Length: 251
Image (cartoon, rainbow, N blue to C red; front, side, top):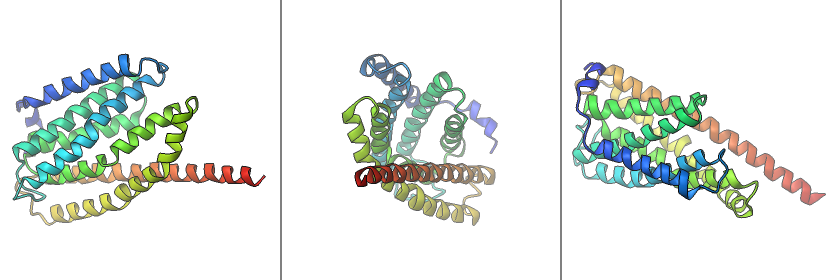
């Protein structure tokens, strides 16, 4: 199956509606909810707002879509509900990609991440029509930390000038880091290992082209690797901060 066929496929009706909803929420967050924040912080805060709207709901929607499919497997056909969840996430990543292109065009890491993620979702949804089970499990693993991460990010942005934000940041950091490490460092790699083993057996080659599932595995592997590096650096930073506090108390 040729990826060029993607341009001839009709975009599903929910996708533009989801995108419009994220766009409206982003504008409301930027111009109303966070209007008193500095211009430097408002784009990031608005991005967190749409991430909050996407992350936790996507986990529950994906979980429901998986459980409602009795024939779920790594190469099973996408169900209508699974396609809706994919559209829901595609719309979010398109909106957040637009955010980065406008406000942070030099942030190649996040732009590349969003483009790669969109490639996986779009090919699963509009080219292969199979494999949503695997992609939605990965979506759950990626977004289960979303609520905590976005609150932590917002608190981190204001911790230097708002005492309450500093307290929230300090309180959330250890449990957030622990949860993120568990999901990205253990559960994610284990599922990718099972996913890779299944596709490598050739069981899905008749419905998911080899180049496609190899691309999926590669994108997920790279995303997990970057996540592990990111959370490792945060653990190191936290250790240094706590060490300094202990040294000050001793003095």
